[in-house]
Image 1 (cartoon, rainbow, N blue to C red):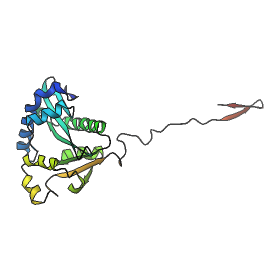
Image 2 (cartoon, rainbow, N blue to C red):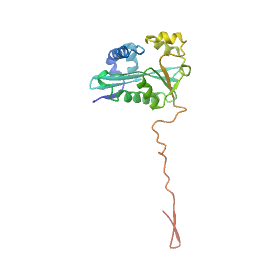
Image 3 (cartoon, helix red, strand yellow):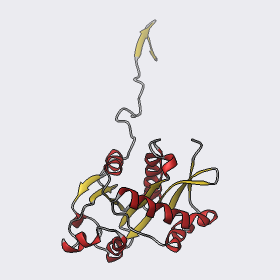
Length: 205
């Protein structure tokens, strides 16, 4: 696998429709809810640098993007997808790490959240420090919940008054959680000053 994960920019907008098709095909195959997005919406995220795209040469291998809500107080990592030819090779985890790091760089004071039905995605989030939460702890921005209208499980969300669905809410709050990958042993070591008496004179070692 010779895949490179790029931070998106205007050079990659031509992949927008392929990304939408891949999201749709994945949802159909898994029978789980993935919110639909238009090619124009995906292209907007790519143009704004709020996405990462995995390419094997010029072939689309994977994708994920960032959404912001409640005046940038909440950030969602969304649309994580991997082409069938590249699954079960650890690529999804690499894309997840890349979009997570980009989210923290662009919005350092935001709460990062995700909603997911798949066990693999929930496990990746947990490894990054996300905690399962109720929907009430996520953004109350109507624009986010409108995005769920394209999901096949939207009626379940509506029946529960937007308080629960088949998805699990996961939240990472950088203000209260430790920095990832910081070793508890990575502290500055101060070399002690040892005084040695030699020939009636003190020397520092």
